[in-house]
Length: 107
Image 1: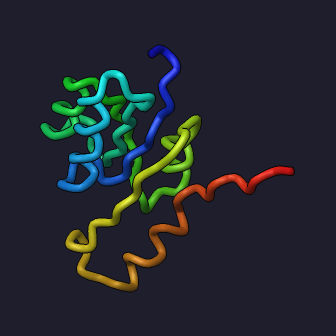
Image 2: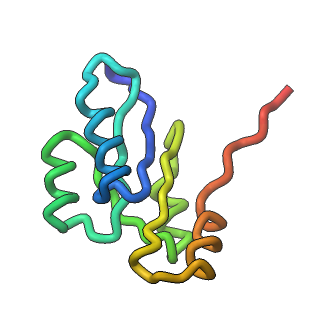
């Protein structure tokens, strides 16, 4: 299926995001491809996802331009924050504001 729809996964090297990436990749007849977003494309977990067939791209939720670039052309997204990296509710809630908004329906 050459024209698979891309699902961008924030937190792809974590438990939830990684599980989703693996599930997408495990379904060769599914209509989706996985784009794994990670801060470090050279980490062992990122390299493992690439080896499995995921498109691994660099993105940092604290850098809105990197996130925008990583989401370009994606059909859908799975986004999860990593609270334990900073232990701050004040930091957790602004993060989704950097994520792209879905287009509004037309017509």
